[in-house]
Image (cartoon, rainbow over all chains, first blue to last red; front, side, top):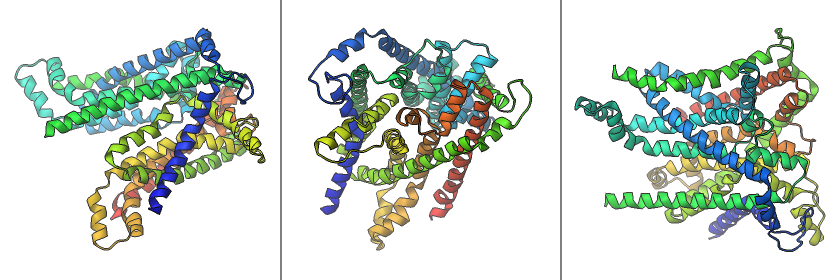
Amino acid sequence: MVKKTAERIYLGLIFLFLYLPIVVLIVLSFNDSKTRVQWGGFTLKWYQNLFDNSMITNAFGTTIFITLASALLATVLGTLAAIGIHAMRAKNQAIMLGATNIPLLNADIVTGLSMMLLFVRFMDLELGMATVLIAHITFNLPYVILNVLPKLKQCNQNTYEAALDLGATPLYAFFKIIWPQIRAGVFSGFLMAMTMSMDDFSITYFTKGAGVNTLSTMIYTQMKRGVIPEMYALSTILFLIALLLLLAMNFGSSRKEKMKMRERI
Amino acid sequence: MRKLGRQLLAGPYLVWIIGFILLPVVVILYFALTNSEGDFTLSNILAIGDPIHLKALFLSLRLAVVCTVICLILAYPLAMILNKTGRKRQNLIVFIFILPMWMNFMLRILAWRMLLNNNGVINTLLETLGLPTLNIINTSTAVVFCMVYDFLPFMVLPIYNSMARISQDVVEAARDLGAGSVTVFFKIILPLTLSGVISGIIMVFVPALTSFAISDLLGGGKVMLIGNVIEQAFNQQFNWNLGSGLSIVLMIFVVVSMALMSAHDKEGGGAGVW
């Protein structure tokens, strides 16, 4: 009994630690006082300002574009790569996977800086949307490959070969046999890539040009200048989006699990 | 023949590896080993011996260790409690602990600044209660607070996953053979979760060692970590060679600490368990 209570208290304290900062931001987003944290009455004006501020809406748009585009391209490139790597001899596989691990293990700041040096000094590219996109695809690729490869290893190679022997074209055999078996891995790779891309700061910071901002780099610049209360409103909205997305995914997966259970019965 | 065709699918990725993974490493090595005229020099790497840089490196290592230890102490019991709760509530609780992770990284820093500021939420509360106020903004304490907040999930999830994999049969077998809770913990739970602990340590230690944004925004320029030194070498002094040299040193530290941890993993997680 005592143990149970202690556990409850512990969970409660961690819960407080995790959510107190978020609650503070949400409460402050309705606070009609610009500088002090004291309560100055209820207001929605920060939300109004938020939607009128083109700097913030632009950063929001850029974030969504970079996140979706980089995750999508990394998923296509990464899935193809995983299929190719899977067909290689063990030694070549090890080399490819070793290289795949580099952006995963390297410090973000070093990855960002080395790519910036490559773009500016070696390729003579101007920093901007394209360089951010390339950088994001690069650090997203390992997540896709490492999610798809285990699924490919679980596939029975013979069924694919059998389909080919029976006259299926490789593409048809792929979509009929391999794809259903790796789909879950591709999807979780895509989701992971999206999460990483959305939350990235360091790599974007070094590879973006002067005019381009994602939410992370925009908030950073604003915080360096001094806090503007619109950021609190932005936090509340982003928190709600995260909540809804996670809820949707959670319910989706638990429904799937229920279906699986039923199938077994 | 068929295999060769499939291997070609990795072709675009191979080009990507060479162009955007290996080439950047070569370029940063080139900058690290040359001076502004392009002549070979080791001075950018040896610049780590400069007292200011050395101080930043030691502070980074110290804060990263402190942050990792706090995360481990907080996360291990948490993972145990999460693992014990019933199936139905488990999903909900895991969900609750993952949700804050989905908040933007920068906004989480902003939140801590509002909490810890001298006229922030915590101090305002303390003042109304008539208690002495805290002065932790712009100190390493504030930086560690935020680091723990940011990186805690990276510690919880691998430990929780390794714990969920432990078969209940093993634990019950040990109990049947007369092991008490303490023995079960040290002989079964701890060894079997060691691989999770180690990946957790790596996933917290490396970003804590190399981050610069948290110390920049919560340290008020007073907490200089090695990441801040590198960032300033690039963006303020425009000394790209020096910045590259220090980056290489940082990379070596990351690789060494990871090698140390995974060597330990092989001893502890493999044959040593049984």
